[in-house]
Image 1 (cartoon, helix red, strand yellow):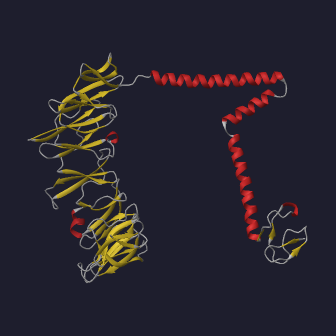
Image 2 (spheres, helix red, strand yellow):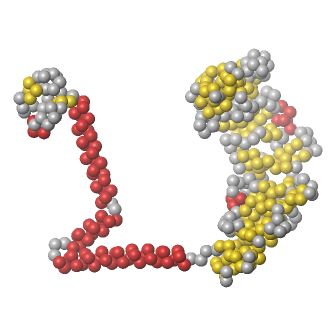
Image 3 (cartoon, helix red, strand yellow):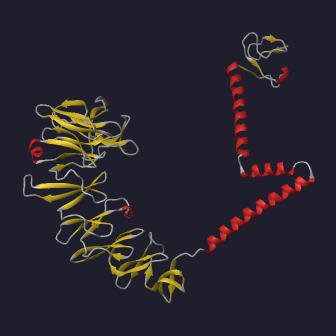
Length: 455
């Protein structure tokens, strides 16, 4: 007989559960190890842990069997068999495998060590570029050279004149732009923008693989891509302050414009003066330098979410008619707004002002042209969506407006009890926080609606 440690009930030796309370008896073959008694749920947990441990052991065994060492050992064992002849064959096989691996590693290390590397070389106090002092690809005649290249370019310095140049160096091509510049604006694998600045202003030149590409210097050269190596088009300002587009070889590929603006979403905006009303017109180019088929337009917002609000004609401009266009120049749909009231798209939704008067009405619309919902209030201002909600201001006057947030169905998610702490930072940052004020106290509003005053 054994006694239950929980209720004291006497139970037969062959039983593992208490007949009275159901607690489990711990001990193999009915032997009480520590007089420990646990309930059934605890016992089930122990069994589950044992099963999980068994599964983990099986997984580790499979991983071991998948390793190279285990497989080689298994092959050797199979080859060896049970007699001395097989064992000899297996041993020879393994030796061959080991010799092959060692030979491959040795060849790799030898090749790596023997590969020639370009580096800055010093000769009699001057510096050049080459594999060693006797194999110079750029003569040692410069006061200093950058220790490492940027792409294929090395910076060259004339310390006495405080000037800088670049050397484009590969095994097959070596071209030097002598130190005659004051500014290396940007360099990459093949392209470099170098400039001079003095009391008369600044001028810049575009070099491709060390070759000057523009026929005349420009007041500035910019590019819309994130990396200069990815740039297929450049924006250049001429001395007469007109701007043109250059291709990656320095060729002018556009007429003169008043200016270019990079509008985001792979679109470049070109502004020009017109002799027709409205007297400012715009044309659009992509990042390859190709003009979009939409032609001249009269007004346009910034591109966001790969679309923008635009007034396409003089008639649209006079009647406050906006079209939504994509970054290829396609017209998606139109809306007639009140007092040119539109707000940029974000997260697939934009805004257009459908009513103005004693109360304002703004309508949310998606990129297919479907109106989603309306918000109506006095002195109503809406902003682009951020993390699934849109900041909205409303109140008896603009001065007394309160800030709240609505979701993509127009439902108020965060109440209208806040005010803007900044005129332009109405979006949640990477930590889901936005700077706002509440009752005159600045703080951070979390996307979940929690407000934390600044310390």
